[in-house]
Length: 569
Image (cartoon, rainbow, N blue to C red; front, top):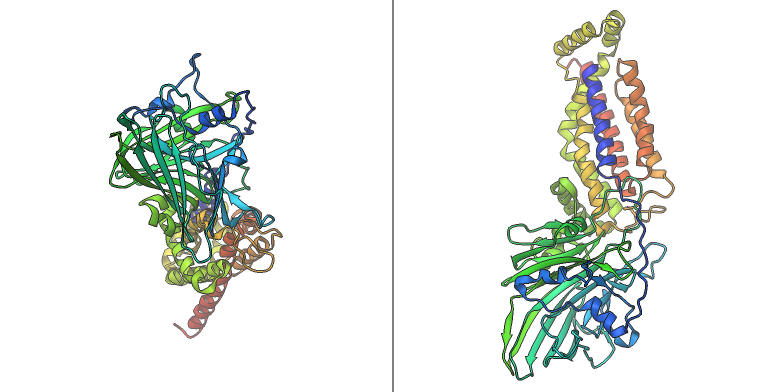
């Protein structure tokens, strides 16, 4: 039947286009370049990398537009931080390193997230001061340089170089004290909590000079655009860049390309700023009751234009004037950790939107919510997928029932359709007319058998994003050989079983009268098997279970239909 053939071709084309063109990773072949060391002092290099020059909140983009005498964009100079400047801090979930020069976080490891299944003892590292892959979180004060001193970042002191959250503690305070070259006494306190990836960063400033001081608090993230490792075949493109939030737009992507084209310069009440990567995110969240100037700028590493650019995204609070002897204080929060929706929602409104579930995000969120609730009891994401698949089949049972009834009727009509084919095979127009009249007489919808497959497509796509974007499913095992549901089956057992289930399902369905269509249908199990070889094991498991349940349902409905017909119903 021509119309059914068109629908089947459309389904295959839809899957192909959606899963190939839209999701196939298409990074340009650019390799990260190393940053050459330059012959400058260690102190000057660290300040060039970590401390922004003086700027006022009304013109924060001054930092972005700073140029050298030759008119070229400013360059970043980064050297490895010496060990004697590092303070190590460890909780039950985080291990961070703080540089006493500026008091900035230059390294962050997530202790509960192994780098890979083969490197379970090595935690994922998000922040790093690697000259070839710079990614640090900074905070401090503007306008803190005395005219006679070229140095801007205070060198903090601490009572000890190592801090660790003890088993009987729920909070860990890391206190840094320093003095700026223009006479400000600064106390920076990091407050970390048990089982938390968000920390409070408190800044207390006392003007110990004899002159008023005007300046602002700021927080920023500095990150080098180092290309990620190439992802697997048919994996969706992961967003790895910046994002910001405002009252009007809770989540707004800020790509590297957008920052290349223009500096961000915007007044936002509250909000947040973040740098995203697959599964993890870092974010500054200033107090919600203030209005801040959000800014970005792009600079080049010391090695030149061919090296990955350095992107800075930050916020600066309104300028304040502190008289001699006066004390001012401000706190903000910094999140560095996994993209877990419940945790992100608790930190800031809209921060959970950094979990990119694609254009079917509502379906994806619903599926993950259901899976999460089930996993709370079964404690295995693989069995959770199986149970969710069964629930979906129950939800669409009535639709499938009518579809399979239609298929049973189509099977009955197979001899009549074959007779029409033999009579009008050379006249396609007459063949179509006679076939449609036969369908009308028998009250059969020729598209009824396609509906179950069509309904599966949105759920299939939504499940794909859930499996690929949910950090909870990262390295999640099921049974035996399947030790990571977010990655492909290492032995291709699930894809092969899925292909066999498709073949079995076709054997229960009526054969198309058109030989070309019949050949296409017979080839679909093989095509889908090859296509699914590189899909996440969890997604193939969903499709396999769905096929098996469909076979049982189809067999039951057709048997019941034939039994009722035999009774004259």
